[in-house]
Length: 293
Image (tube, rainbow, N blue to C red):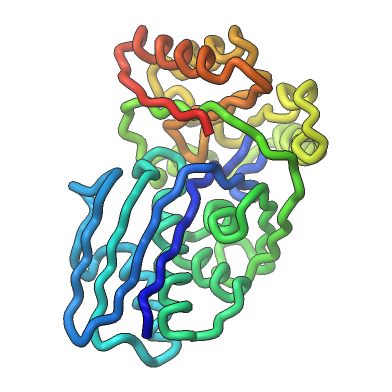
């Protein structure tokens, strides 16, 4: 067995009205190298979150790889895993999905298991609980995900990669602790028919606008009533940050994933938008980092 290196992008899921079903890959990546050795397990982590990511058997990349090894019934005698992370953890950018995808794809290649991309995607979605991060992490670009099972049941997904122009986006990550499970716990179990119709109508428009590169329609298309109104109040300065982005020409903004990152779409002025968004967070007493992707 030879070494295998896997590069996996960050993702922004729950995009606008696309709660739990629409995700977009971003130009920010984690890289993981797998080296088979005669015995033992050694995991090293560099970059984002290195001090907090475990380097024992509880490491998520290793756990995903181990799951595939168990399904196949064989594995390397020993393994070295080297992680180089550029995707911040707990940021709404799919860091856990990136780890799961890297582990499964790397293990599949390392032992020549022969699983299809579709089978790997189903495994990853089962580990993550949903597919809107893992699908664009596997496939790239904009991806629509549909569960083929009853709500709450693990199983197969249908994914549709949607062709779009290349977008450059502004991403701002405020220094606010917001775990996905906590953000999900805020959401109601039931929504009104009016809110469901609101999101369905925006979802169709959003996909059409992104396919066509129609920036004029993105502001309307990115509106949401299912998750962002419940999560945004947890992030100090977020509404002011949205207004700041819009003042410099951002045509649409959204909470990335479960937050706390803000993503903004614009044809130009990307750096002024990022600077103004960071200034808005700073005015609320929150430090932040930004990327133009």
